[in-house]
Length: 164
Image (cartoon, rainbow, N blue to C red; front, side, top):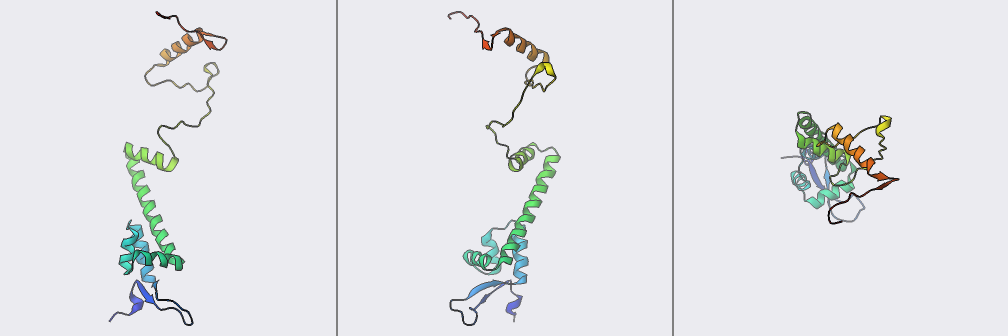
């Protein structure tokens, strides 16, 4: 017959002089099971079932035994590190989707939101020149010169059009 100490979790009665009902206690073997299953990405209900208890009982164990919660979080951290490593490898191998996901997940990049950046651009001072991809540098500079020619003291002169 199996000794209760060999089980991952056992039901223990209240301590001497204490009132109440029995509660679950996770053993050293159970702590290893919790960490391993959490590290594999198993759901809390699956971990609880492996320990022979309900999901609510497992939550109570995590609250009552800090070492159970620590084992659970160590497993989650191990899973997290492995997933990021896999994603990083895919991104390094040229997987564009993996690169986009890493940008969004790890660097708070969001599509459709304006980037917070203060750019001071001065073409004459050798600053950074951002040219749209659809234009050559010469086309961009010609367009800038044309805009400057149509500006009087900071106001844009509207071109006369038919019907104006």
